[in-house]
Amino acid sequence: MVAKAPPSAGVSTPRASRPLLSSLPAVDRLLRDPALAGLKEARGHSVVKQAIQDVLATARAGFESGSPIPDADSLRAAIGAKVEAQTAPRIRSVINLTGTVIHTNLGRALMADEAVESVVAAMRSYCALEYDLAGGDRGDRDTIVEELLVDLTGAEAATVVNNNAAAVVLTLAALAGRKEAVISHGELIEIGGAFRMPDIMKAAGCRLVAIGTTNRTHPRDYENAIGPKTGIVVKAHWSNYAISGFTNVVDEAAIAEIAHRQGVPFMVDLGAGALIDLTRFGLPCEPLPRDSLNSGVDVVTFSGDKLLGGPQAGIIVGGKDVIARIKKHPLKRAMRCSKVTLAALEATLRIYGSDHRLAERLPVLALLTRSPEDIRAACGRVLPAVARFVGDSFTVRISDCASQIGSGSLPVDRLPSSAVVVEPCSTKGSGKAIASITERLRGLPTPVLGRVSQGALWLDLRCLRSPEEAQLVAELEAGR
Ligand SMILES: *Cc1c(COP(=O)(O)O)cnc(C)c1O
Image 1 (tube, rainbow, N blue to C red):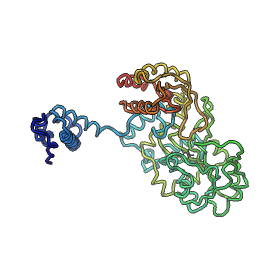
Image 2 (image 1 turned 30 degrees about the vertical axis):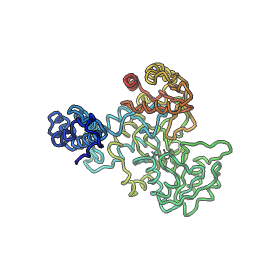
Image 3 (image 1 turned 45 degrees about the vertical axis):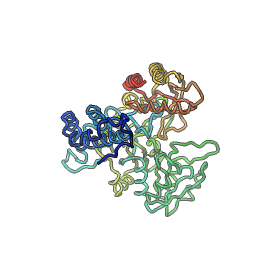
């Protein structure tokens, strides 16, 4: 490519004596540069070549707007930086100071060490995923977790798919495809990320029959709606909203009784799906799959990566016959879990099975049960580094706050916590000041994410575990 001459500069200007564009090395010469050999060896010829082309294009454009031609060392440094930027993982670790423990945008549950180790082993080697080692025959991958799920929920049988949305679609399609699905108006929920119950039902091939009203549904609403065209009765956990005041919901046992009188199966989408009574740990009460099954519900679906604290998965538990119908449906194959998911899920379920030191071994439970005193003490340790990082135009203090569990679990309940609060000294331009601080925190080597509220930045330290605490302080000190 021939570059244009710089815009007509007089012969007497200093520009006339600048080195010529032709002094910029060619792509091939840089590719043969011994100083870049190590980079080529590590990252590959094509990645380095692309970086060279990009860096030379930038240098040419710079020359045209009057900048000098970079020397060989600066070119090499720029090429190295370009390669690093291009090959850096897009799935980056972040420090979650939003106070939301199960944050969908930040990957939901942190997993137990046992789950991490099991996943690594399953990824590194062949494993008996669908292989019955006792008989030497082909096996079923569901058996890896089915027994554990049966023990933990009291169900007769269980199966797993990629997420709870898939579990709901599959259950509806298998039990009520081309038939009517009866659900209360008040449960036509939308969960974040485009999970909307009416759309899910349509996608599963069911005809939605909404009964009752937004705030009140009665047993007679179910009785009147169920008929020969009904394929399933559905109940969905509200998850991320609450209704209060003049309300009525029909309890699961009563709905089960009405549905079974007509020979229709009854499913419950529990959403978060705690496996144990969380009140044991001083947490708000969350319904258990076991309780639904005991009330006569035929199938219960829930997520693996919400309160359960495992990998993204959709767990389906219920009676032998309904689970067999679900497993046989062609969509089951399209939604099946990988060995990576199954390895993580099995290890997580085994922790529950042992019922031993759960709040230490399950990170989600550890974070949810962290004491306010412990979090406040962490705020005290982190505050000086935050104050130095943000500088004199902000005040920094510690304040009580309330953490969220997240992902639609226990929506109204908040956990008492503490935050380092960063506030601009001057109210003038405070919005911009906050935006610039949040941007600087996001720009740290390990990006830090807080919550902006009431004209201040709140760094809730509930989810800051001790190795990350030291890292955060070090990065704040280095970044100021
Ligand atoms: C979260 C949730 C879902 C979706 O589950 P995913 O695992 O995110 O697919 C469906 N229903 C309810 C009630 C939920 O809370």
